[in-house]
Length: 189
Length: 201
Image (cartoon, rainbow over all chains, first blue to last red; front, side, top):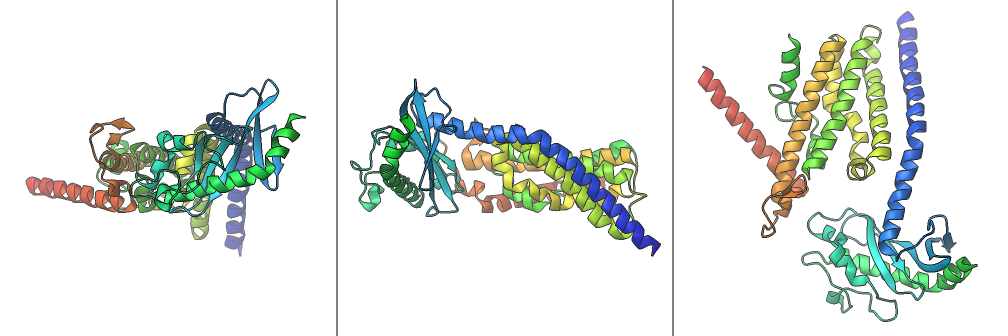
């Protein structure tokens, strides 16, 4: 009986001390972690949009479940960035950030998250590959890879990944087209 | 046993990866690049050293029947600390290793050392045991990562070795490459120790 009490006591004590020390570490690292995630998003926004001088994550406009990060220079909107997702890749979820200017032209694309095959599908994160989206719009381009009769390059040996990305950006632009007025005109007020 | 032997044993004679074949999950999963291997190794080594010291300090008050849960709580606490600190301060690295950090909890090397060494020895020799085993683990993962990165990507620690004309052997950075590389390194090490044993006899 005594030994059971001792077991419970020791295990309970160890867990209490562990929980207390973790709460301290959590408090200390909370700010840096939040800041690191914010910086990651801001870096990506900076890479897909023209120069801006506001904080796009603060000037965010949500339209029908999609968050549009509005970038402004001297108070005038210069573009918006939004996330697109695809589960049609070779493995797991692909998340990309797409930047568009007020006329709906793509200003840049950056891959935020993916688990595609290194050396094959994963090559789609290369700036040279992503540059092909620049200046394209929903209306003037056929949002499919060339192999499927569209306007966009695929990657040798890995068609599935670009196919998923191109389709996701196309769908994102379609959703954006409907939200465009709200994002830019609503945000300009 | 002297502290020096305690320390070097983990690096060579009882190297956790190449001799004891412990902790295979992170060994095979994260070693696609040398830097990943190094970071995973150091994170594991840190947890190993801390867990060894704490277990050793309290070895006389921990009842034998609940020692495994106590060890796991201690190990999990340090792993969570590493996870939070890495996420906040080396965010890029945390993104690559993210999923594997919590798995350090179930790394057999750490529980193995707590059970086999730290629960029977003083804090100082447990510290050296943790350092030796941790460095042995780190060196093994870095070596695996370097070999796979070299052939699979033509670089080591991101620096180009073979030049632009090199066609990477992509299988080396895919999961099969981990088994192939580990197998070849194990064969080489076993061969060397056989040669040495014969020379000694």
